[in-house]
Image (cartoon, rainbow, N blue to C red):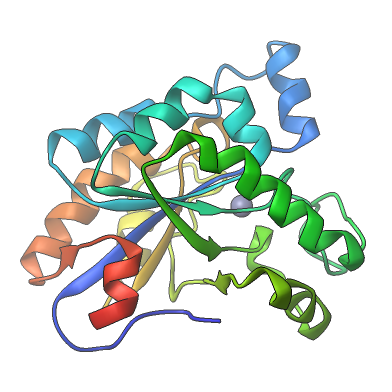
Length: 220
Ligand SMILES: [Zn+2]
């Protein structure tokens, strides 16, 4: 389990979670929400040639196969696992739907099966929904050989109403080796694409360079 890479060098990892629950799918079907895929984030990262790592839920991948192909097709982007349906495997994890911990390994394995056909830079990184985990949940994952990645810089972008607090939250805490947690879920994180240019500029001012998560964890 890791929160960040070595505190040497100038590398930081930008990570974007792609949550998808049955409730979110219902919102899409009913037209209450337009999209949970923030393409402006991809546009910006591609235009500026910025590396990033995407923690994908299986249900998000199945809902957005074209966007997943776009992520997998970028040699600067890594793909990682964020469960199948963004369920929690511990009690009291925000308002997330809950699954018993004995279903965790199968859930994560199934998610890899959904992601792997897209190719690209596949990883064995895994992030728990809501970062909620306990000893039992970590034990359950042991057979899968995954690295659990929380992150040390929480942008606070879910349900944000303004972009400036996200920029401040990231730039106040980011250091060499940091793993920054953001979301690519548009309707549930609508300010992230507005904050991102300012975050990238602030990183440059601090002499920090975004890199794929595997590189940040390996050498800092
Ligand atoms: Zn999540």
